[in-house]
Image: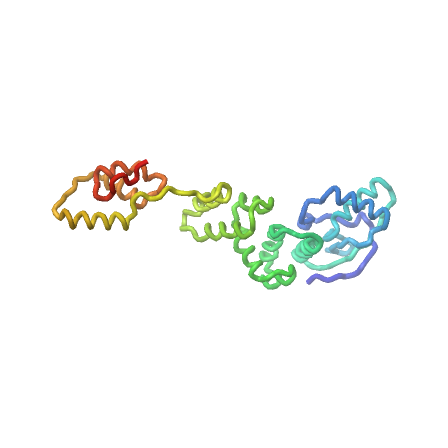
Length: 273
């Protein structure tokens, strides 16, 4: 459980960066320079947040821009800020990652995708979805959707989310389509969905002949010509089935054969052009 152990004044050199705890957005150089000037003028008004994993072993959890600003100050002014004000917290690694995200999200208008890795990490660390939601001030359903869709999300779709090129609702809809696809067809469904996302929905040509229309017309023809017979090849039957049920963008190649072998199924001029 996260707990504030104390407020302290520790040597700058005892504060380290942990490979699993980082600012949820790249450190902004201009913001660092702004903090440097402000700290030189007014001092460090807000302490850094550090995790004391072991006695006097500190890892930065909150205040990355201020920490980088102090690093610049010390390079330009030897002896400055040999010690810094900190709020010392205790807890497990997953709790520190959650706290890091929360501290950053509370300061900025954090984008949804900036929560993804932390939510998945906490879920894998056996935090309940209720606990994750409560800590991040989010609903359980919000957590459930991230846990359900993000781990298997295609890297291209994730990149578009990270770059604000697609909304979460659209990305979520694509994930649902892929999960609902028949076994073995997931990749094809994904590619179609991504293409539609980038280029707009694919508009297929109108089907020349539907099974319903073919049945109705053939029934009428048989009623009018009960003794009529046809001699057809396997290729003729393949063209007929393909015209009725195959991909719409490939129907033209079968149209002429069906028109010739099964004239009763197509009305005059139908499918021309």
